[in-house]
Image (cartoon, rainbow, N blue to C red):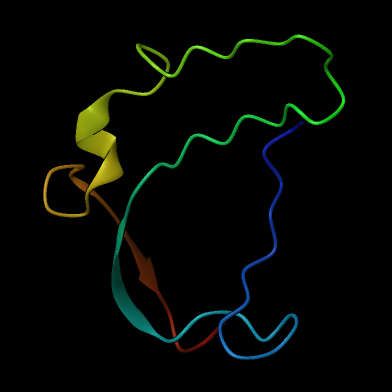
Length: 65
């Protein structure tokens, strides 16, 4: 994966509401196609990034697009 994403709020490809948004990082492990895979959920993403109150991450969305 290359990090590209499409932001949707209410309907497909409508973007985001203008203003400041606090962010979290969520780890997703896709295991359906990996036989006998035992994922480790520890140490991959620092737990502080799982909450908008502790991540320190935010983004400002302009109303100008």
